Length: 104
Image (spheres, one colour):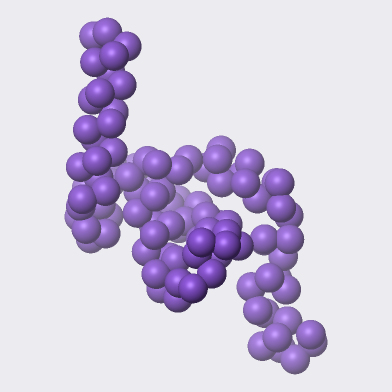
């Protein structure tokens, strides 16, 4: 298989994964499903800090993150890289935990 054919096949797979519902992606996922949860959670936190996603609800962000991770658009390495660039993303204060506990 040539590089061009491999790239086209990858693009087709990504497009078909985007058109699938979240339920289909979860059911079709071949990897360890429980390992996806921390990756998707961290990715949702990264997405929340992006300006274009500020208007989205928590449920919308989680769904977007799960779709990105389950479809293979985002890998654990990419999530680690994104969180390393902005460490405050994973701090408890950024999650609203301090506000809920009344410590803010």
